[in-house]
Length: 263
Image 1: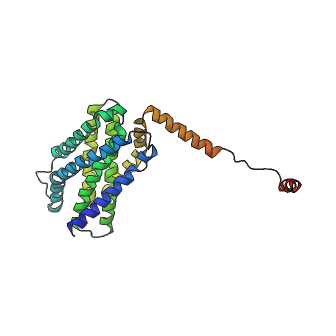
Image 2: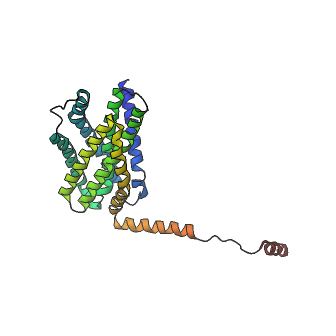
Image 3: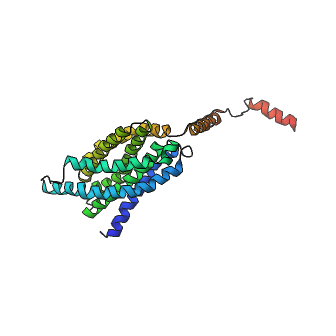
């Protein structure tokens, strides 16, 4: 397939996954957190995610792919490299979440979600590009492309939002090591999913279970004034829904006679 078309397919899937990942968690509290800073993290996430995805592809995916084809483990495929590559990416994200504009508003979780979406989007683009280049041989390959495009940004968003939440609680080193562990695990699962649909059993349920926690992390990152305004807005909406409609409950005969007398 033409390289330009291949990239277009991968880019569209990755961008759709990023857009869907933004909806829900980030749109629920839109207007009550530092949105400009979150969008700024998307920009940096695209740059960092592109470098991370490319380096992981050459140093982890290709040796894994070669080992899968030959059935023999390559020297490049080892546990040290598996954790070193995600560690470097995690440290880069840590420094982005430590920037003054992020710490000033306490928006580590919302910025982390936005940053993770962009990083995961770049990762999905590289994986989908590899899948399309390898050839699409049926519905399973199409489903794999769709699932990678949808879940890769969301998985990275959950990990990086968790990273930001731990930073907000003062657990800096814990944030780095935990995020590195989960990033290495997710990377392994996505590479496994490239070859076997069984991997989605280990990817989808944890992400669905983490959805409520992710909303709580984002809520914790909303400033106190923003929380008060959001609660007031929700209370106003509830009052509007519960407000009794002004309905005339008199019998119809009485209403008709009243109208006749008025005439």
